[in-house]
Image (cartoon, rainbow, N blue to C red; front, side, top):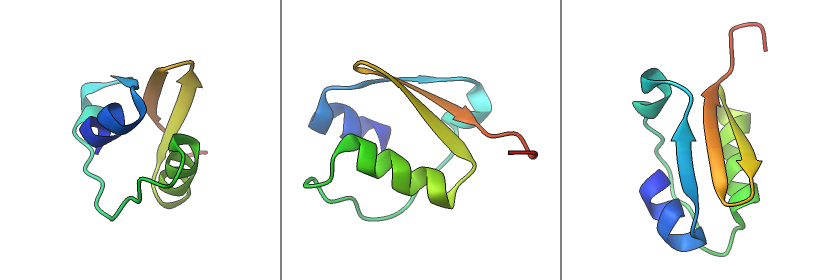
Length: 66
């Protein structure tokens, strides 16, 4: 998924850990959505958080208390 988002939106992804880097997301993504909309959808259905810093996106796992 991140490879496709990198191409579509010219983004760079950094993963907070190797564990997060191995997460698999499945689903259909429409190119009409903004990157922020896609991140929001994924955050609502998984235990990850996307922190946006310009073109750089840091992907981290939420701890069990969040």
